[in-house]
Length: 385
Picture 1 (tube, rainbow, N blue to C red):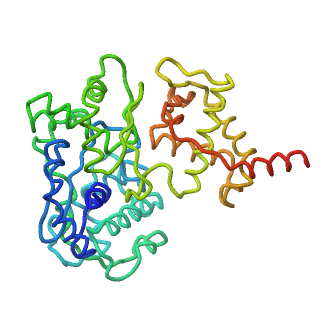
Picture 2: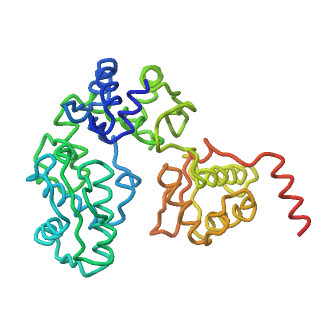
């Protein structure tokens, strides 16, 4: 169901931005709403302005978050902008200085916000651009990039009225929470006291919203559910997502067809995706020739230095086929990009305070290399050197 894919993939569907898509989703919603509410425990907001699926993760993971943000300050700025917009009506205009004054007066930290500091201005610019892209504000006049050079620079904005739907509704008072695990535990249990339903919804969420669900041992209730309910899961995933369901000893995942609509998936058309495919192939070959030895859970732990060396070897063997950007990238930057990308898809974990890399089983599932002609040309070039 393409409509369900769109709803799962997009943060929301704004009627003003895409009227045709809005009505297409609205008309098709009865066909899969029961799946969303009963199997995943999701709530769908439908009003004259938008359609939003309030997506929750089955388990918090390191790759989750807003990809454009790099610091807690940016998240704090976003929350303050949402608070600021609470008092602004739809199409009500305001200027950048209204926001900067509000943030300075309400920032919840011992660190004071100082707009003379470029770092603080840069954080706000990223948040404002995100707010504009997601659709909670519009730029009527100006460009916030001017704020980077001059903290007195003004931009005229207007509220779209969608900010009130940005944060999902919580069933409990979040002021009582001390960390993200309190949210995970209380939300599911409060919504439904039946632990069987809690586990079912958690498993469906993890399978559909995460790259892979790993087997965490004999006492892992989620993986026990996956193995026991494999046929039911497979049928639901095929019926509603149009995808295949693969279950292995140490991991289960949804494998999408080539014509899927999801933006963030592996592999995709990005150059770094191709490089990671090649990295995975190198890992598989290193296992075959005995250079790497998996543990009983199919993970492999190596030193960060050893992983860096593998990336260096990958580069020397394959860079002839890479884009100009990655042929010329600094070695340390390439290593960082490979690690960040692989960690984002649960292919590896950085452990031991950054001194070790744990290679996860998913690396062996999806791997690739250049065709035989490229390999022959590469070897010929090496002989010529």
